[in-house]
Amino acid sequence: MKETSMKGMMKAATVAALAAAMPLAGFSAQGRAPKALMVMVDGLRADAVENMPMPTLLMLRDGKWKPGYKGCYSWTAHTLYDARPSSAANHAAIATGVTAKKTGVWNNGETPKGNFAEWPSWLARVVDAQPGIKALFTYTWDGDVGLSPHPGVIDVMAPSVENWPATPGAYDEYGRFVPNILAQADAPDATICFIGTGDGGGHRSGFYPYGNDYVRNIKAVDRMIGDMLASIASRPSFKDEDWLIMVTSDHGGYGRAHGIWGGHATTIPVVVAGRNVPNGRLAGMPHNYDLAPMALSHFGVDVSGMNLDGRAPDKAVADAARPLRDGLAAYLPFSSAKIDNKAGGKVTATAHGKTVSGVGGGRFGNCLHVEAEWQGACGVSLDGSENLSFENEADFAMTLWVRLDKPQPMQTPIVCNKDWANGANPGVVLIAARTTDAVKVPGVCFNCGLGDDRKRLDMGTFDIDYGEWVFYAVTRNCEGILSIYQGGHDGRLYWIAEEAASMKLKTGLPFVIGQSGTQKCKVSLKGDVDDFALWTRALTHEEIRSIYECGQKGRSLGNLM
Image: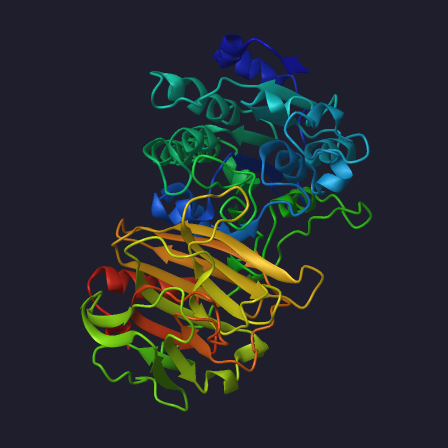
């Protein structure tokens, strides 16, 4: 069934008729009727959920929607690996639970040619397994036409809200469309709802750094989801229903574009609420296509023989609270000309070349000033750091504040413990002024060597704010997830993440601030560094946020300890 009259679809009588046209579904073994709502948000970066903030998604995350419902989430979930982070390929993956290699949808415009006969949407699979189920796929983008071609799935292209709030009445037109359907007594049992609002704002004014249109539109998305939940909870039969609420995205973005590798377009959120979901942060790096098998299992459909690529998230992690001093191997506040490691231990700091500590104008008083450019040995070496024992051999974290007053030569190391002559070499490097993929503006990036077929991992770029102190953090945890954070003067903490289970951290070389681990890189940093810290363990998201927010208040890491 394909609805073509958008205004007609908005009439209450038509909405009621749509729902009533579908037969009633059965009940679960627990005595509650299984129901599911999947929301695909176009262009939602993971960090936008906390930064906007999006109170509805945060409520779902925290398991505070309704009594009996828990919440699980990931701020380091990922898009497809075998297709670029664009819409069509990821929409197909989210709906089917398989990657582009199986759906055959690699790029926008290819959905009509997708192999959905062999790899149908989870809506179609539920209808086939339980013919009484009512299923609805509703969307605003014509690129989704043909995504769920099944006679038992009602397919509705709804009114668009791409230009909200610039277009008066646009929210009322689309923002109430799905809530009106969900409020009906005979509403669909299983619904996929696509919201394109975020993507429209990102393309107009920027996904990162967030543009005004993106901020307004993402807040509208949260409002829409809140209205959907309110409609669900208002149903007279709600107490007898078992709802699974799933929210994810097809991509993030950088500047006014997406489709690029490196983290900014590929790091997305996953938020799930239900009676039988894990409670808390989901382990590892979930993918957006992991939600399809989760939805199938919710309806009692056996997925074991389907050969899906997605795996239903079933494990949550409770991040243990640890004192910040635990695992702290080096802490350099650069408060005086003598560089002391305030963490103690066997790591000592040695200045090389035109490097001066205790210079005024730091983020918290004094700082480290590195004056070199196109020179050899320079910066500060952390002697003894090459002998440190890291948890799980590769878990580590470092935080620091950086100020750069002008563009840096290409591939300039900010902090490095590797031979930077080849990015595939073991070790890590935080880099200034590197362009990656389609990104041409100066920024801060990250590279590490891998022990698998990928050889190296290069992660995106965070734009440099010249003349401003900017916070950076890098951490890799025991689940093999590498995350990079940037916190600027705008008060927002941005982050991106990639899988780095095979990362090789130890190199036999010390960590060096302002140069490579060999101290032979043809360029050295020219800029200021303050409040540098290195841990032999991972830092949690909450710990990194606390360090940044403390710094925003003018207090150094030392004040937290």
